[in-house]
Image (spheres, one colour):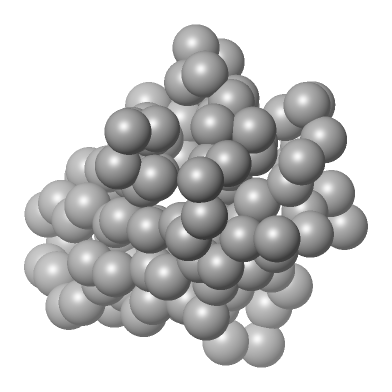
Length: 124
């Protein structure tokens, strides 16, 4: 089992950048595929990005391709989401997720563990 804690959210102006972090407990972090999802008020939870166990493979949602970058540091048990060129449509609560299955998945049901979320607000 793994526990996830997100940090780094906040208020940023349109066009700005933020980096989110997700710290995982336990000594088996490198065995989990990690992902970021987000949920805006009144909307479904949306896939943002996923990264393979080693970090060599990544997968992005269409709405963030070219602007967001997911990465991980297995020595620090942490996954990151670098967000650039932010706009108001990126305003949401961002969640970190983990699964022990090897495939990079874009569906909520593909992940077994979730953090509590961190709010990102982009002002226009």
